[in-house]
Image (cartoon, rainbow, N blue to C red; front, side, top):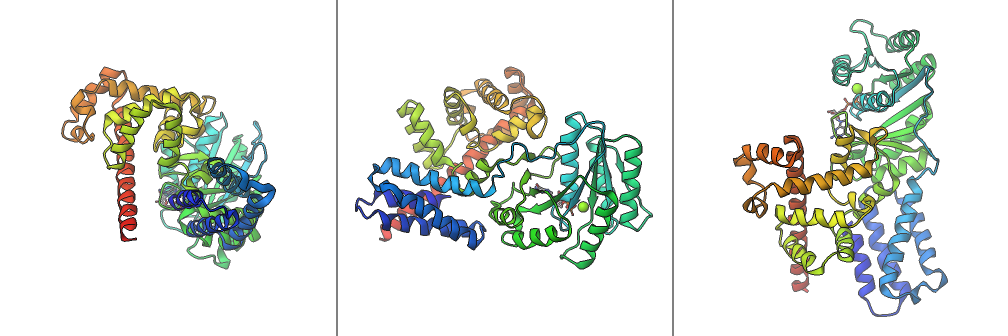
Length: 455
Ligand code: GDP
Ligand code: MG
């Protein structure tokens, strides 16, 4: 992400009017960054051609540099979004009420199938469906117990067997039982092997032919990088899945590999997994996915917005501190107040780490049924301001670590601000994330300075 920003900036600070050279230099850097995020080389090169054509057409070099920068970013961004955006109104399977809808999960072992099954079950249960989970993984010891524990926690009825070794039989029995009991969504979890063995595919095909799924979902681990394309292709051939769930997006992986998987199988990503908990589940959004991939949801984009709406002095002071690696709760409070002033939160919400999750937790999980996510985001922001209003001056000017030594203060602050201990802890966590970002920004800046001095 940083690389792309720098490329764009360097290209534009170049006063020489050789626009073509500028664009090519910039494209080279962007290409490298995309390849490093595991985007497939063929895709990158076609992307490069498209972007180049777009930028070099119609005398775009006549634009003033500030507009050129925006244009370049927009072209890159739009092209990438096109790759993952399926453009259908709603790609999530529209289950019919009062009918048995069977959803089958496939994917390699460890990709996150069992976890995602429960998450999807919760998603439908919240929408008023009668949902049941079937464990057709008889291969891995403990598979049934894992599904059972998840299901109990989520209050979802389940089916499985400790004695029947044949997964096809278990799947068929489970689906039959739930159908008889008028369940509306029946989710079938299958086993995965370590490798893409023949036996796995055979088993998948057999299960699929007995349970006759209305939808098959492939679960893909974001951290497998470039391997995603091959894996998705192999699965597509035996189990013609209609959707992808991309897991472990909370880790280091940016999921660039998934772009190739989507392109190779022409199948949309519908949800992303962002943690191990059943609520760590978000509807896939092409724009925020690409923003993260490019690092646009980072502090620089945020500063641009901040600068456009705030009192320059406040922001400058805050950014000075931020760049020094210092970010107090007071800075955080100022930031939240600024966010409130900005009106629509949609652009800003994604730039503050943790805000997405906080807003979702408030609405009770992925997209929260009928409550509007942006409403919640703005509630979270307001609440954060109340919480920080209840802190002492000393606490506000601290790095927040004082609360570890004196946890009773958290309880007092929660009471004082009319919030819960959990909400105060959540806020402190968000602040810690921002503080960490501030430290890495400071490091980056120092490195850049050092590089400059070296010549
Ligand atoms: P399965 O073998 O495909 O059924 O995979 P599991 O559902 O058992 O998941 C394998 C491991 O990945 C477990 O430890 C899960 O808790 C973890 N996991 C699943 N989804 C996610 C996710 O979105 N984020 C993180 N951090 N871990 C996940
Ligand atoms: Mg499993």
